[in-house]
Image 1 (cartoon, rainbow, N blue to C red):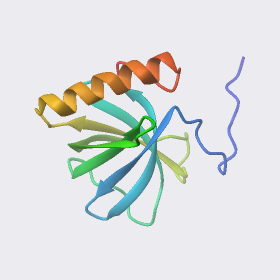
Image 2 (cartoon, helix red, strand yellow; image 1 turned 60 degrees about the vertical axis):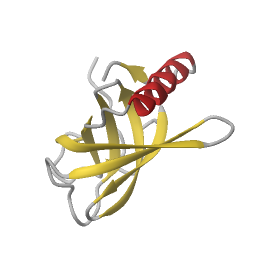
Image 3 (cartoon, rainbow, N blue to C red; image 1 turned 180 degrees about the horizontal axis):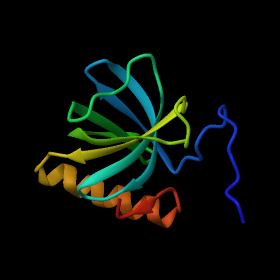
Image 4 (tube, rainbow, N blue to C red; image 1 turned 45 degrees about the vertical axis):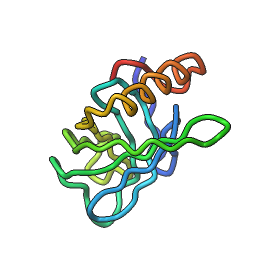
Length: 124
């Protein structure tokens, strides 16, 4: 069967959501996959494209108390999400640089919770 083309305006299906703080501004993002080393994110393409190797902060929110983890990292890879030159969506590989035990514990809980809720795929 041939792959079905998605309309450009369709938002990628979300597993979880967060905010990516880049040097050029804040981007809402959809979390497609998550591991202790990296996150696979989808963002809407803006006027300025994110730069590879740019430092960034990923804000993730979880739980009834709305805990927010601010995870430091960099953009390891950027790929067009749709197979066309004017893709409205970009897929980013965000690698974590934090060695903080508390943040890693939070990330482990988030992965376990998200996997149980089928919000995203573990092992980005």
